[in-house]
Length: 114
Length: 112
Image (cartoon, rainbow over all chains, first blue to last red; front, side, top):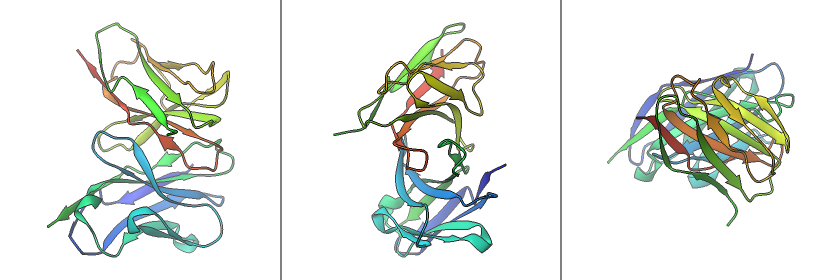
């Protein structure tokens, strides 16, 4: 069965520091991978997606992620954290025979210290 | 602007009562989804629909029901059989299975 693991339910960084949120997946076939961000009491907003092609994917707000098949990882990074990046981040995976069903990780809450 | 509208934003349920959460989209998307979000558990799929008049159970369908009579609408009923309904409910839609899902702003359901 597919699964998604996000390492660290809480991550804290200082403003201007590197943001690294980890995501590992298990899938027997090539996956489609997504990162979403959620602000308090709101829905999820897509940050970026990997389907096929280039393994380094750039998203909104300066975030990017790299698909590493050998490591079954899709970690999210941002070179310099901003206070407005404080939110909860979800990694999700689907594959061609899932009918669009997304499997979500448990989420990582990012705190940014001034 | 196209998007997904969920209503109400907050909802309270009495014991033994069924309540219905509304989800409407004007994105012309074929697929629609309902998720339940609990603290520390991520999102879990309740029901999904890939086309009008058809829907499938997700991972936690017990105590819930849905209908898909129109492309734009996918209401979720939380029945009295759902013994722990307190949660944040999110509706989503997508154009196709491999396209990103767009989310509404959610409905927070609590028990009176």
